[in-house]
Image (tube, rainbow over all chains, first blue to last red; front, side, top):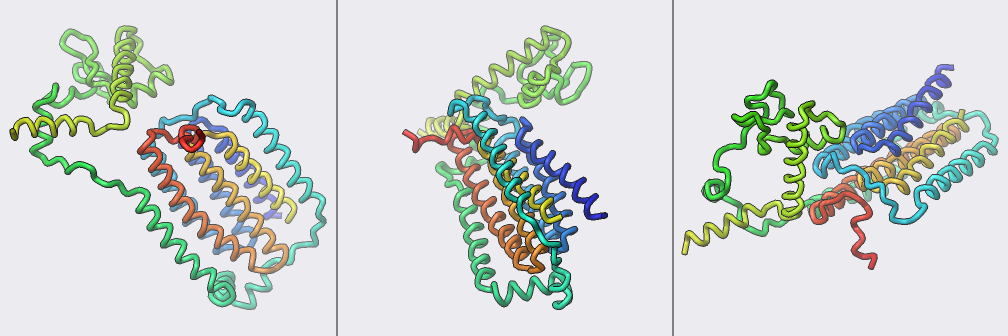
Length: 278
Length: 98
């Protein structure tokens, strides 16, 4: 009885979370939904006499893999939302049709099979003195070669990730002297105005005001401003809202110009240093 | 109960497959692949109990190991593509198409 209740609760939760994973617009929500699915599956493993797998599921999946996903998500940019342009016409419709058909096919096939009452792994595990000793004996006797190959796989994966994520330094590292020189030869030697200076609040999303009361475009945090524009949280003062919008557009245009070459300033700096040297 | 677990596993697998087909963000596509692997693991564990045989649990354990390795490599590739193309969308990595 207890198992039935657990199953139905977790089945509903995990299917809902899986749908949320597929259909939520923001990638971070998808990641959290995946975490919910994995945790419910861990409980289902525990209910089905697989305590070792339940623990491994929580440690490896919800611990390590989810952390890796979130880490890469932050690295790649949280606000990179999906484009809604279909590159293949009708792909979305046919994907959903195919998914429904596939689910119906599998469910009907499974529903047609008559299962005898489950044997349960209790007998096997009790003979070996528990779930983990029984699994360990199998891993280190019958499947020991597969286990050893697994270690090779893990080492290969670790090396591969290091090689793939490694980036060669194509120009020498900028020293403190170079950075100082670039800063003073640039347009703004002083730090940028902090957010909220002279404004009514000093929250990070409040742009600083210049002495004449207008918004200083340099103090606008572009990431926050983008979110505010998306969610319509711009200040009630239409002039300030327009300034934020304008500053954001300008910043994005600059970003597009520099684009991939985020290290443009350093290049300019090199030129300056070379001129000085000659 | 076995049927229930298997149907749940099939549903999760189908949802994951739809996600792989629908989503354009490479990271979300990857998460959907993980969902499919997890659904398979649930089926393995269920069959282990159905037949009173620990092999299913053992295979699920190996699937987890392979999935972890796959995530590491896949995410490294995504990061690398993002560095060169400034995009995590699967539509933008189409240089081999033409």
